[in-house]
Every structure is written in C-alpha cells, then in structure tokens.
Length: 143
Image 1 (tube, one colour):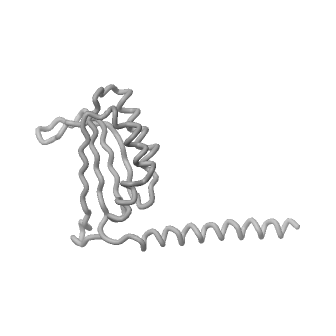
Image 2 (tube, one colour):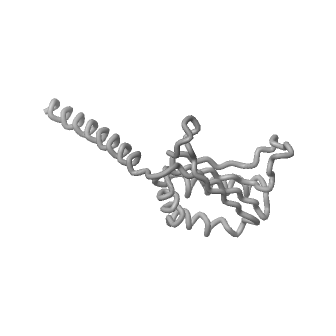
Image 3 (cartoon, one colour):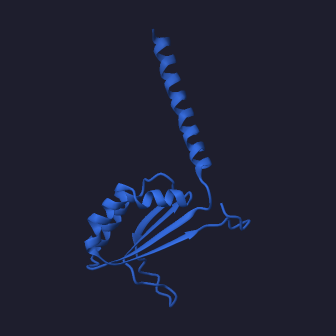
C-alpha cells in the first residue's frame, strides 16, 4: 500500500512538472514579433510618500502578473538622479516588458488593468506612456 501511494505521488509530481515545462515552452513559441516595452510615468496631484507607496502597491497588485509579461517593475523617482538630462516630472514609474505586441494589447483591455486605472486615476495629475519595440542588442535583430 505504501509503495502504491508513493508511486501515485511521484507520478503526480512528475506529471505536473512536465505540464509546467510544456506550458512555458508554448508561451515562448506563441510570441510573434519583438518584445514591447511599456513605460508609464505618473505625476501625482498630491505627491506624498504615502500616495507614492500606495500607487506602487496598486501597480504590483493589478499589473505585475499578466500573460506575456517578461519583466515588471514599479517604483518612485530616484532622488539622487539630478543631472540636466534627467526628466524629473513624475513621481512613480511603471516598467513592463511584454513578449510581443499581442500580449501588450491583451493587457491594455484586461479587467485588472482597467480596474487599476479606475481605482487610481483620481490621484493622477498627468500620465505619460512610452511604448517601444526592443531589438536584440547583439545582433540588431528584432526578437
């Protein structure tokens, strides 16, 4: 009986591992076109430390875990970056990289993204969005 239970457990573990690997491979194959960088800069109406932290947490809650996201980060303006070339007209920055434009477009209309906007837009004085396609820096080829 113990051997049967062990065999069943081992089969379940191995089966789920194989399914996970296949799912990851399927996602890689599904990408068509270059990665898309989606950078968003928020200027708050009331840029208190509390409001900045609240927006960063909302980004994490609603925007970090979408299909096709290969990189996510949200944070506040770096106070030590004050060169003449630094644009300091924002309080919170959101950085997302998607596998491709299709993943970006799916995210744009996703209910969690729309909920994020609805719950937070009242506190925004200005929002700037910068979308770009990434090329492979070694070869110059679009991914």
